[in-house]
Length: 131
Image (cartoon, rainbow, N blue to C red; front, side, top):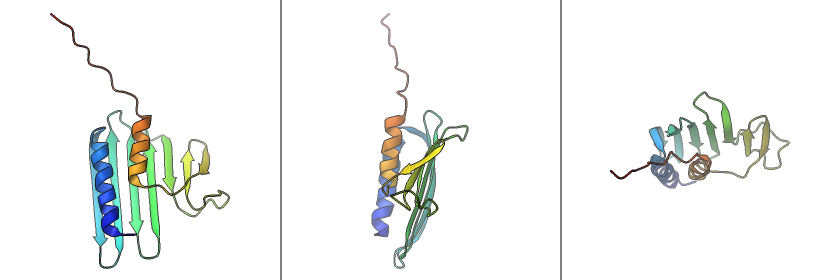
């Protein structure tokens, strides 16, 4: 995995989320020469729901966790590739949804942000009246 490409992917996802969020915080630690990246972040969307994520890239492995939850911290969904559900055909990639675990192909932060935006309720409409 190209570290520069991954950093750009995270930046693009944050720019997309910016239109729908009220708060964003992302920390990076990387060494391009070693091919190592650790990123973690939090995006709070306009309805109060939160995406917390971590991505870790080493020459040996790519790890990810994208945890989307309500403001009360109730799970909406979480994608990760922690190798603890070998019964899932897409092992180690999987998706947690309330009360079950389902198959999932590998995902990236941009795809997750786009999925969240599709799930967001439409904000209230501004009503303008003539005087």
